Length: 156
Image (cartoon, rainbow, N blue to C red; front, side, top):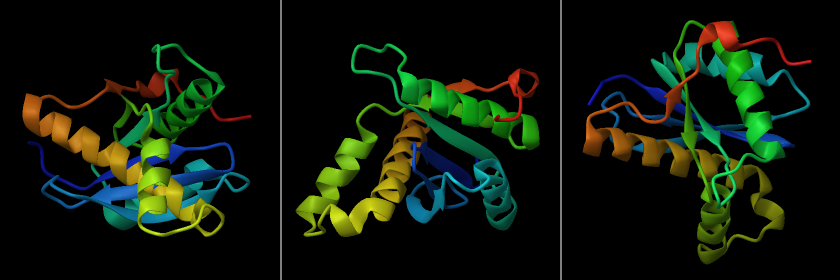
């Protein structure tokens, strides 16, 4: 298992949830929710610097059949823009149902949907990052696909 803090990013249309791992890559914890109306790439870059992250894992929300959706394209665009803006490696990892799992877990913990909106994005980022960490630990390989910086271009 590679060492170093990793950030998990759950890209949504309104908010972006962020989680981080411990330096040993064992446990993911929530960090922050960024508003999409702000410069998301700048916000993630700030968090990379703040947490001295060695890698960023961006969730790729494929449909249950594995097909791309509008959300898939949106996440891919954020990952490409981020890869072009930072020196830190950016990886895309399948995140099917992380938001659904996060919302269910919060409901089971007694939190209403209304006052969990900003937290659900962080919880989804935690689920995504924990899955990526567990996958790497079990296979010995980095999760998902590396986003090549030359593919990136700024978001319009």
